[in-house]
Amino acid sequence: PLADISQATNNFDEKLMIGSGGFGKVYKATLYGKKVAVKRGGEDHGQGRPEFVTEIMVLSQIRHRHLVSLHGYCDENSEMILVYEFMEKGTLQDHLYGDKDHPKLSWERRLEICISAARGLHYLHTGSEGGIIHRDVKSTNILLNEKYVAKVADFGISRLDNVDVDVDEGEMSYVKGSFGYLDPEYVRCMKLTQKSDVYSFGVVLLEVLCARPALDHSRPSKEVNLAGWAIKQIKNGNVQRIIDPFIVDTINPDSLRKFVEIVEKCLKDTGDERPSMVDVLWDLEYVLKFQS
Ligand code: ADP
Image 1 (cartoon, protein in one colour):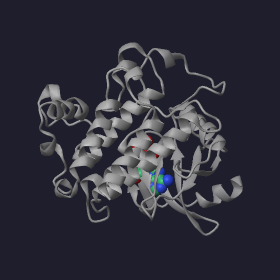
Image 2: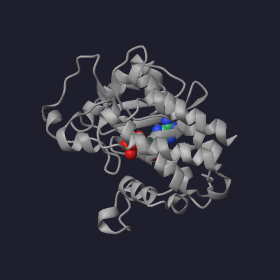
Image 3: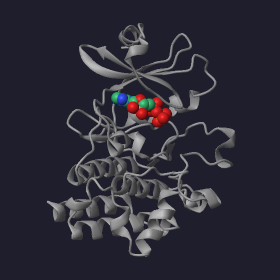
């Protein structure tokens, strides 16, 4: 209920802030004795409003074990507040680089996380409501709960093909998403499809294998993109050299070969050449079977 959500978010304590993003700040709070994450948008209804509405439209229609769930929202007194299940272990990206609160993960665990995220995205693409393109698949939008179960988050710029949403004026003329993850076909000719999510997911798979950022300005100028750089290394037979040293000795060669094949398919230049999310999911399950 809105009253309870407002109550939960009344006393924002900066010490309880767990992050901030494009939409606003994220806090840890308690609602009905359960830990929740509260996202609080700007106080005016201009900036962030379309993202707020889209997030609610998507998450109120669909529920899935591998999509982060929205417990409620508040849209009163010119405040935009979203209340989510609390994802104790933070983002997948945090764990790729590792620190004292976010230990690095084994190859098996990384594969399990990729499989879960793929399940969530497959459901988004084809589930009961179907036809939703996430549009911002990246390692910071894959969250982990206390058992390291992965859930896809952040549906603010998703495109819903099944609902008549007010598309903002510039929608068709500028690219939305995150640099380093953008489908080249979408950038070239504004062709946005579910295969655009598959491309971005391919970049996430590379991040998981290499523990390197999707965009890295420390590399020579033409190789800023992880996708471009890694595919070149793979083609030149340097796969071993691009793997995160933390896991390199634990990866079964058959599992690695298959994983790299999936990445290459996801990162094909055109959507038609890329697999669907369900194919990616099945292939990843196969990789995990090889590994364990
Ligand atoms: P962005 O707009 O950059 O994607 P968000 O506003 O979605 O960022 O989230 C900012 C940060 O807050 C995330 O990187 C994550 O650390 C944290 N966060 C977001 N949602 C949750 C959640 N449900 N549970 C725990 N932490 C969260």
